[in-house]
Length: 255
Figure (cartoon, rainbow, N blue to C red):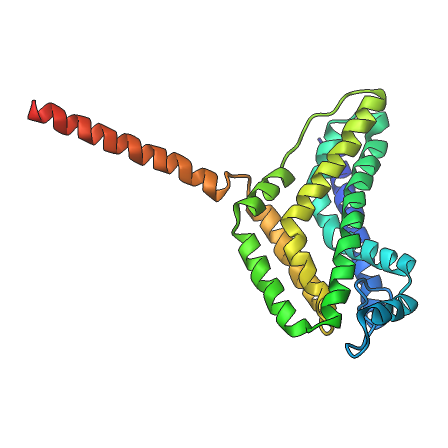
């Protein structure tokens, strides 16, 4: 028991330290070029979009943007991986645990890196246009997404803990696939909130901290449950049954 608790604490310490280091690097480079979504590139809206896009790439190379996005995801999402990685470790044999956890993290990170290919150009386009109205629209979209059945479905998928094959290539495939699926569910649950810091020119880092705390609290608090539309159907069915029962009772009294 003591050894198991010690190993769990070690996982918590590793992920916590990784997140803290990533946040520290982001803080040090807040005014530099390391942050994603062209945080430091002040593209002029007087230029044509193609010209301003080329100018932004001169200030922020694709490699630097990818590194900044990876750093952002590492800082914000590492705490969310504690429970999934505990599950992977518990379901893997001792000699395969480290490899299994690395494969899961690689699959998870691959999905987020792919999402960055869409988020960052979209953020640049928003900054080239009128950022204030678009930020308001993005906030409204985020609020609507938060209460949508699709959001709850994605959040439910984040709580899934599937089984894996025990040995060989099948075990590697299952763990990596689980990382991909978990990453896709996490992107689906968080995308609307993650876009908001990318649209901010000022207070970018503070927005990231706020979004991270909200996502972490939501993940810890909102346990899996049926999406709202699915919850409405049983209640409608129950109401129909009650009405049918009442009608049958009234008919019996008349007879």
